[in-house]
Length: 106
Image (cartoon, rainbow, N blue to C red; front, side, top):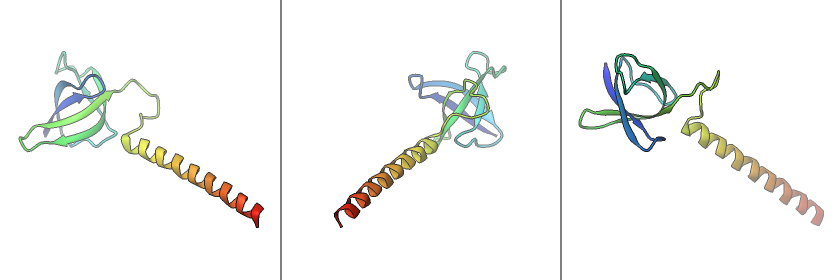
């Protein structure tokens, strides 16, 4: 069992509830917690990052999960992949334009 303190980085970097979990959550998983009543676990949060500190306190960087249906919100890695995909498409487009102009010259 590991204890984690939630850090709500999208809501002003405030410290939230402390939860005890049987396993270490990975980025992209959901955790239940409640700051008002630690016994009820009424709120669900999306884990974006895990921080282990030397002092024994562990932290989860979380944001509220608002019921996205069947698809979870994008993680930071998903956003980076999406950005890279856009860059690759732009480079391919530029390459096509350059090849087209070179063929016109020759």
